[in-house]
Structure formats: C-alpha cells, structure tokens
Image (cartoon, rainbow, N blue to C red):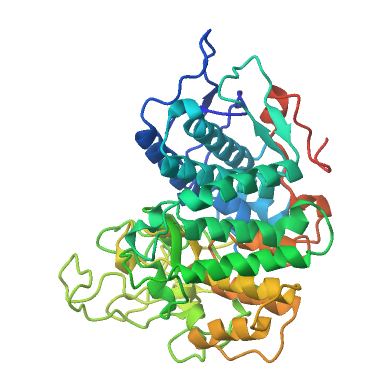
Length: 531
C-alpha cells in the first residue's frame, strides 16, 4: 500500500528489501500541509477526520511489524528465527532480537513516521478552527496523547509541528520531560469530556477508563522517562488512584483467560478497556505453521514468531509438554490431541461436524501438533510437526524449531477482530507494582497479584520481588505490547537471554531515524547511535 501522509519527518528514504513475509515497506511520500496566505481554517468534517484518526491508529497496531515488533521482538518474549530463507528479510528481525539495530532500521522509521503523522493530524482536529464539540476534542486529545506516549517511550524526544507550519519550517522538538507534560495535559483536559464507557462494544473508542489507564501507565514509567531514579511515592499513589477509577467504571478481572481474546465483545467482557476492530489475524498466522489451516485460511500460517524456552518455563506445568493434563496453569494454554465436535454457534465452514481450528492449541504450542481427526501433522517435508524448545541459532532453523505462541485463535475465524490495546488485568498488575514501589492502598501488592493468580488457576505466591512481578506481568500480558518497557522498568532489558548477549544501556531508546535527522536539524541523535 502507498499512502501520502502528513508527517514530521518530511522526507522518507527509499526502503527496499526482499521479504518472505507480507511486509509492505514501499516508499512513502511524506508531506506537510501546504502553506497559503490564509491561516489554517480547520478540518472540513471533524467526525470523519476523527474516524480516520482511529483507523490510522488501528493500522499502526495491527501489523506484526513496526510497533509490535519493537515492543515484543526486542524483548525476551518473542523471536523470529530465520528458517532456511524464510523470515530472513535482510536481517531486520535478527537485529531486533540481538539489539544491533541502527538508525536505518525500517520498523524504527515506520513507527516514528506513523505516530508522528497521527500527532499532526490530531492536532488539526483539536485546533479551535476545526470547531469540534467537547467530546470530539477530548477523543482527539486522548489519541494524540496515546500517539505521543509511544514516541516518548521509544525515542525519548518528540518533534511537533503547528498546523500553519509548512515544509520551510523545521518542527520544534520537545524533550522527554516536556513531551510527558504535554501528553499528560492532553489526558487531564480530555478526561471530563470523554464518555464514561462501560464494558462492551463501545470500547473501540476513547473513554474515561482508557484515559485513566494511560495516565496510570505514564505515572508508572515516569521515573524512567524523566531519568529521576527511584519512582516517587506520590506518582505511585496516582497509579493506584487511576486504576481504582477504572474499577469504578465497571471494568474488572474476568475468568476464562482465552475467552478475553474472542472477537464478540459484549457487556460480560469486563477486561477489555480499549481495542481495535481488526488485527487479530496477524497474531494468529504469524506464528502457526503452513500446515495448520482452517477452511477460511487453507494457506495456513506464516511459520515465523516463536518464544524462548526460558520464557515458556516461567509458567507452571510440565517443562516438555503442554498437552491437556500437563499440570499447566490456565494462561500457558494447551495443545489439543484432536478437534472438537462443533456445537451450536461454533464455526464449521466445511460442515464436517468439527469446530474449525479446534485442533490448534491455545497459548504455547510445543511438541507434536495434530489434525482435526487426531492424526499427527507433518511439516512440508513430511517430518512430524513437533515444535521444539531448542533453537540452533537465529539462523539455520527448520520449519519445526521454536515454541509457538497464540492468544487470538483461528476457531474465531481467519480474520478475527478485537485486538486488545488496554485491558483491566494490566491495570490490576500496575496497581500491584505501584503498591510494591511505595504507593498506598488498603491491599498489599501480594494480595493484588494473588487475586489474579487464583482467578487464572495458578498457585498463589508466598512473597513478591521485582523479578516475580516482572514474571507475572509476562505470564499475563504476553503478546500485548507491554514487554519491552516492562523489562526496561525492571532493569532487565539489556541483560543476556537466549541467543542474545548483554547489550549497552543506551539500547533502552531507539535511534532517531536517519532520514528524520536529515530533514529536521532540531533533532539530535540519541546517545550511542551517533556514528
């Protein structure tokens, strides 16, 4: 796809590489608003412009590249090994895992452009000349703060262009602390005019609950963003207060872990706070093998994304099997030995009496995989499709190496919606962490964590440490855009893990893309990336 976008960078370099995946990284013609003798007169249709802004945010989130890759594939949670020539992609995935990226990495550039473009378009909607009503402006301010949050988190500085500034004006640049204050002001101003949405279908739009969660997340990471050392107790109290406000809106922990990720959202789904209406398919097919198919996707998966053995080992259960009855906790999922009989409401596109995709497991897929009739699946060369914990390296893999990981499920269709951005369990664990870090509450951090673990059929913990909290967030929130900044906050992001050596501390920020530096001399390259 080729798009013209309003963008801070102004100039985008040519990006070309051959990929075995569905990457579409063509040139992008990046432009700013044309300057005339007249002042900016506002967007013509605020409602449709706001809808377009939501659609753009969803596009930023749904792909397995860009933001998702930066947050997950650079962590100890996911890796994308090269299998023969598959997933080689000129090393873009391997450099993420090994923390050897540079300022020309396409996902770093795309993410920078995507969210800065959204900031500019939302600034146009927010401008008084656009004459949006109070709720429209509040929604736009939430989305602008959401977009700015990611630039703050990933890059540490935020360029900003006013609506009347053309390409002859270099955008100003906010420091991390200035951008933090700017985004926080947007959220605080938006909060009273956002709808008090309750659980259900309307969670695909901004709400007071979503704003409370983003505010809490910013306070939880504030000491990292401002480089102030230890978190301040008053900031942790803010986290507790905003999480409690989410609970007062009707959101709560929900039993049935994998049911949370089903596409049909109604008032009984108390976990989902903010979501998109599409994008679950990339989380399904990016990990499954080509021969793991459903009637509405006979091509099967893309055979890429895997997890690390040491991440899998964080969960309770048999270390070498995830078949039913392996002693595993609910969140680790299971590998079915055959498909299930289709019941009322179950998908059965080929009318064979078996629920489509019910032979495909949930959570972590390890060991032999099975067909609907219980036969053992094979890979394309005829070998038994046995997913292994062992990986020979980031290269030199066959089709079977690596544990696969699946939260969204093909039994819900080849292209299920409801890609979750914020959910209550994240807020719940943020509250526990804030208490652990000095915040005040009538509950202990351990009580809060165990409340969730008991709901997930996991053994209650006897004590809590930083590492245990980080592990618990991993067990609950894998594949949900959280792992990189969780590891940074807990001080493990530059540590050694499987197929990665210890890396330099400057890697907690990504570089400013090379083309952005060329187009805007007000930007300065982040330390460590100067050469």
